[in-house]
Every structure is written in structure tokens, then in C-alpha cells.
Image (tube, rainbow, N blue to C red; front, side):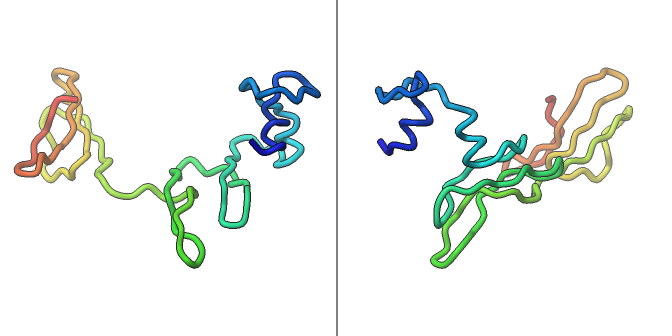
Amino acid sequence: MPAVVQALLAENEGSTSTPGGSIDSDALDEAFGDTVGALLRRGITGWELIAPGTEDQVLKMQPFGSPEVLLPDWGTATGGGGGFSHSASPPVSPNEGDRWVDEDTGIQYTYYNDGNTSQWVEF
């Protein structure tokens, strides 16, 4: 195990014994900064920090470098529906993933395609 990992995971300050699982937060802050929400990843050339994402982003595997490798990075969520409605009858032209709450019963449904048909399924 690399010395830096032993130093970060040592149970007691100054210990050279086998790591016990605790992480020295001060050492990580010193090495990578103390930005709340930042993520650490192993990039192409070494360890690097990913800045915090925004509320409309998701962590995705993205292509980097040549030859191309996939690394985690922030991106925009894609696919699926996402519409939401609240009414006595289901929406007329739903998209897969849309949600509807029957205002008469309070039951929530999701519009789902099982590969053969599309229908509202109780959530």
C-alpha cells in the first residue's frame, strides 16, 4: 500500500501501523482543498478534484483524452419524461416517465412502456 494512503488512513496520528479505516480530513484538505461538494477522481495523469456540480447536473461517465477513457464528470441528465400533472383524468399525450396524480383518489401513476405497450402504472 502506498505510503500516502497509509498516512491518510492511519488510526493514530504518527502511526505507521496498518490502516484502520479512519481518514485524516486535515490531510485531505491540505492536499486537495476544502470546497464542500467537491469530488476526488483518478484522472488520466493523476488524482484531481471535480468542482461541485449544480442542482440540474448529474454525475456521468464522460469521454476524455486520447486514447479515449471514460471518467466521472458532471453532465446534464437526459432521457425519460419528467412531466407531472394533477387532475381527475390522465394526460392525453404523455411521455414515458411522466407522472400523474389522480386528484379524486390521490393515487400517483407513472407512464411506463413495458416493451409492448404503454400505460399508466400505479406508483
